[in-house]
Image 1 (tube, rainbow, N blue to C red):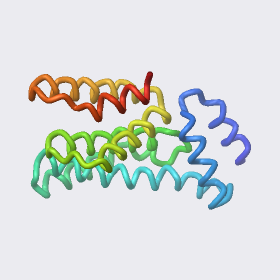
Image 2: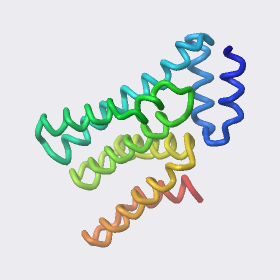
Image 3: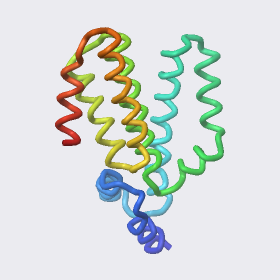
Length: 168
């Protein structure tokens, strides 16, 4: 029964506001059938797997490593279970992976184009607005930015301005 499923999603305090916003927009397009509502999380899981594949390539540029990381994530029971639930976990993971991927691109690849910063902070907004557990990941990213700034004696004012704007 759809009403019971939707009621349980609304009463779950762990789902963030972005998840409700995107889910309601998605429902306007596809309708309110349970199968299509579950497909929203499945689509997000597909994007997550793609980002995991790309991140694995950044850390170990061998196809075997990339496919192994992709396969181990895809067959993980927790990942596959969360991929079919109507909950915010896949959107929160997408925000974390997107911000991590772009953080690596900006700091380690030294690509400081404005669009990377824009999408980096979009990933942070997706993560922070989807689930409160993501704040630990975002805190680790912020610590990494500070560590890189101290280590390289280069301040990243774009990051600091963005973080101050978002959270203060």
